[in-house]
Length: 89
Image: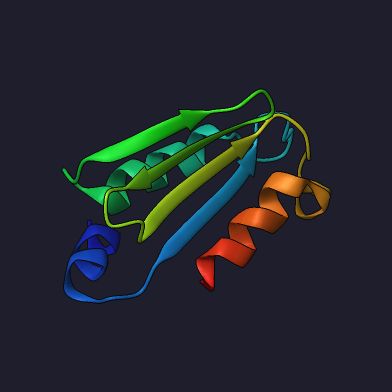
């Protein structure tokens, strides 16, 4: 709940990026973190062929889930790179 309180009281943004084929850490962890961070805020979900993007209406909390990347190669996916770049815009 500390994460939820922090997102309510500050203006910083959070972008979570995870791959469904990560064998070391389940992608369910980042889904849970997104749900905790957004804490009752509404969000939109966009489904693409290679990724799912969930973001709150104010676009401050975002979750990008890709189908490729595993644990150590996620940073090389196009979806991950675009998510990180869009966090700075």
